[in-house]
Length: 452
Image 1 (cartoon, rainbow, N blue to C red):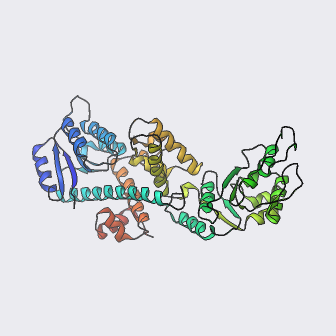
Image 2: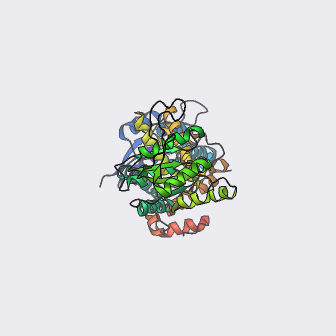
Image 3: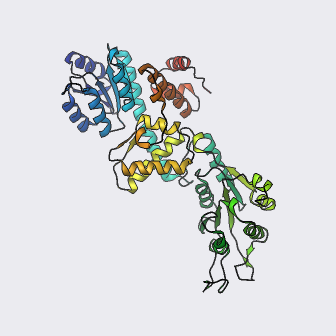
């Protein structure tokens, strides 16, 4: 098995030798005593773990040498796990290091066994993140649900729904807030259906003026109105044999609702200005962010049309309720936009991931996509921080009054995420983090976390 790499940055020779002796059995160890040597080794050897003494001798008075090195290393490789070693009296800088992206901290004097445990856990997390990224890339490339990314229970329900109705010809109604991915679900249903080799046509009922929407949907005959110089097929005819996705169906006028109702009953249409019925074989998938039952009560939507559309329906969860999916989607989008724009791969800082999960996402996946795209294209550096995301509001670490409180907040979130990834199984979560089952239970008890 290939050994992991650990870089020890320490200006005290005795401590360097002690740490080298302690870690040489399990890791390939590199030693550095100052900024220049540490950065050179870091660039040449690309270690997964760095043990960094914050109190290195500074080149200039007033500088915190360890923080300068930390900032440079994270800029060069945001994936690296940096464990800062500090004295009790340097709590302020230790907290700053964590906010800058350090993985963990350790207080002097050094206890080798404790430090080994922290390094082992950091290495396990590094390996897990690498594995998860590779798995995500593989899953997306092989994903039969198109660009729909998700691993939370709600999304597995959506995948099961797609699987169960795709091969049928039934009308589908997709509900959910704006930006939740209704068009992606509609496209996935089409691509997993027997109609997949036929057209998938999308029309947004709010994007076209009402006076033009009828001819856009149903087509028109020559001379039907001023400017109709030739016959034109509408979206219904263009999607013959395939699927027509009607987005924002709740915005249709009563006149168009009546014409849609006729199609659903008779499977035929008439072009504007025409009197000939045209048979159309098309599956209808409709979507809305409105409460159609409330619209019926307000006399804004036909009740008979609602029941024709709502043969089978599904409600997509808002992004804020999807937990770990938020960072999963963000990482996928970062990779996608970096490749599309021929940019070097970029990464989220630890605090940026927390900020993404803490944000309310009123615009859902569409808003996340816009924020990630902007960050990838505009930012020159490879590390995307919480500040770069410009989400507004505070993260949990911003509210921390002390280094101890910041550590507790991070560990609580860390433990909960490990449990979520492992479906509540403590043994699996403990193994993933590289700690014993007993230690994991002790931490759960310490922070008042109940495994599901």
